[in-house]
Length: 98
Image (cartoon, rainbow, N blue to C red; front, top):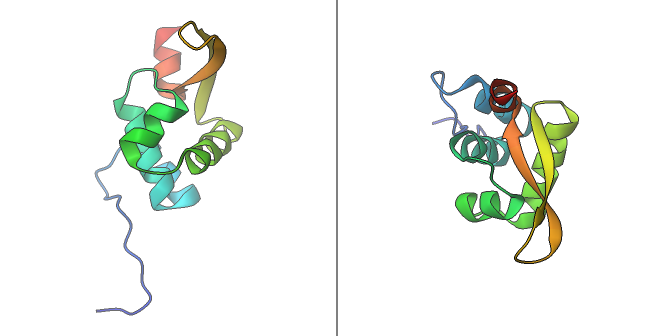
């Protein structure tokens, strides 16, 4: 067994979006990307709950992927709370809807 070698949670048959996210930031990025690809219009809190990653870390990942134009954030009003939240989509999903 190789010491010091890290094994990633992404394999060769994984979605290209998840593989790209993993190359950018490692396993946490892959978990968020995988959850984002499987969910329909999730918020940052939804992604945090589904990945067991802290909310601040999920937000950092989302902002980084958004800055690299891999995902799209859409601001909507949450009528239950009365404030604005972002829902997140992969560029692939948002392009299909337009």
